[in-house]
Image (tube, one colour):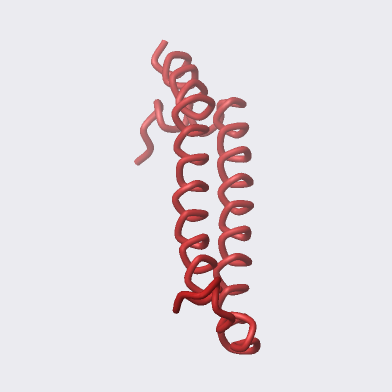
Length: 102
């Protein structure tokens, strides 16, 4: 049994646009995150001397700020997605619901 409102939403052109934009952007950010994360893991696996270089006269090595950079990068791309979702995707969703409940 199918709900007519659900059918109306799924056949709406703006819903198709929303799905395409959201999925495309989500996959792009996922790919970017995988490259950054596995790039860091590859550095750990294949170039330990590079990451083991000390920074200045202290005991901190280059691997620590790069690892923290991976964490910050994750937070930043999450913020980018949330910002886009709250502006563009929410606007499209409201328009779709408004049209579908007429």
